[in-house]
Amino acid sequence: MRKALRWLLALTVLIGTLSTAATAGAATAAQPQDIKDRLLAIPGMSLVEEKPYTGYRFFVLNYTQPIDHRHPSKGTFQQRITVLHKDVSRPTVFYTSGYNVSTTPGRREPTQIVDGNQVSLEYRFFTPSRPAPADWTKLDIWQAASDQHRVFKALKQVYPHNWLATGGSKGGMTATYYERFYPRDMDGVVAYVAPNDVRNDEDSAYDRFFATVGTKECRDRLNAVQREALVRRESLEKKYAAYATENGLTFTTVGGIDRAYEAVVLDYVWGFWQYNLLQNCGTVPADAATATDDAIWSSVDDISGFSAYADQGLEQYTPYYYQAGTQLGAPTIRFPYIEKKLIRYGYQPPRNFVPAAIPMRWQSGVMRDVDSWVRHHARHMLFVYGQNDPWGSERFRPGTGARDAYVFTAPGMNHGANVAGLVPDEKALATARILEWAGVASPAVLADPSAAKPLARHDARLDARDVEREPALRP
Image (cartoon, rainbow, N blue to C red; front, top):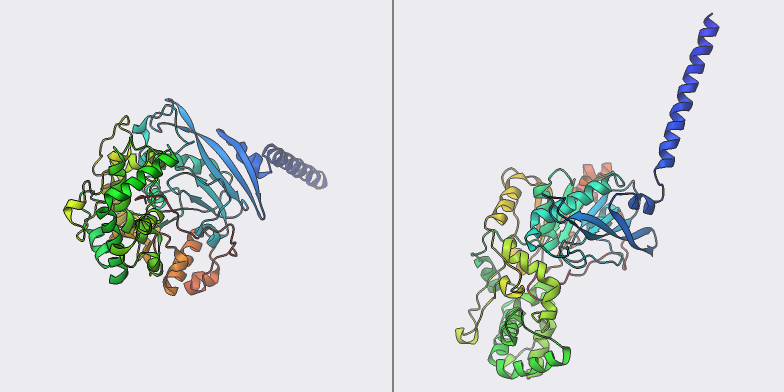
């Protein structure tokens, strides 16, 4: 009898095991194994193209998003994303520039540090990720954060391990806003050179920056060229008109070539410090008063870009200027070394750079809300700024209530500041925190942050280390 019972029990266990194995096998068979198939199995995801890169799979995709996340039934649009796939067992970095997405394989600094996957998102309303027709009232930081939230939820089932959000400049702002509205999504945030315009009508921090940045010799050179470009306005505007004709440029949005000319010239000093290092000051004409018109023109064009405020230069950036004039804010600075009679318009408001047919209304308090949240609730957040970058004059500063949050400044660096440019102790600490937030810190790093190093080798083609450059006065 006992033998019979033991035999029956063994048979029952065997049947149960086979049944479980069959069920698991069926589930495995039902789920695609190839990463492309897994991505395309996500509802709303479609493939644009796959590009080869050694050691990775790189996909350009479209994802169906609601135009209005509060009312998803009121239409959808296709938002472009890219996926740099390493392995589903690795952490994932969620990157956005806050503008268009690049369709060329590239790896941001946190992705190299954690040796992970990278998902990159095109910001809503930057073409082709723009609803048609475009309801511009649906372009705000909450809607954009909700785009990221939906992408994260969709891809988390494919990439189940830790996620970090990152971005530079407007992308750093975007990563911060995302964390503010969806603080439970990411395991950490690395925001580079992210401006924080809490009070749009108070910009004295920028004036203080330009009074002390670099060396007096360099400041004097730059200021003299900028002033001279306004002194020679008549002759250089004739050159500008010929340049516009030759290149098919028009100036309807800004209100004429004179306004565009002054906007380009007034960006000159800011643009130099945003994208250059102190050592580049030698490229600036040493004696502006005796320099030729061509020398003044070339220096301003190289730094500011005379096409920036033409209709053709502004069109791509309409979404940025719309946001700057409705929620983000925009800087205004003084020019104490230039006579008032030489400046006709000053720093023009974002409204001047958006087509008149698009309505705009300023929403006060939006940036103050984000700033307050960062000060009191930031968790696992790292902000990196460049010492000589104008945009860092108004920055995020975690305060009382923030936990495991940091602000570091890279000495001598511009708008391309990164963790690699920090002083050794801060570089090690920042790298260690990124590794821990991503869940890939070794016991040695957990015990001693000075042991922290990027997990992936540097790849000259893949690792983007240049400044994320946008023409004219844009973060």
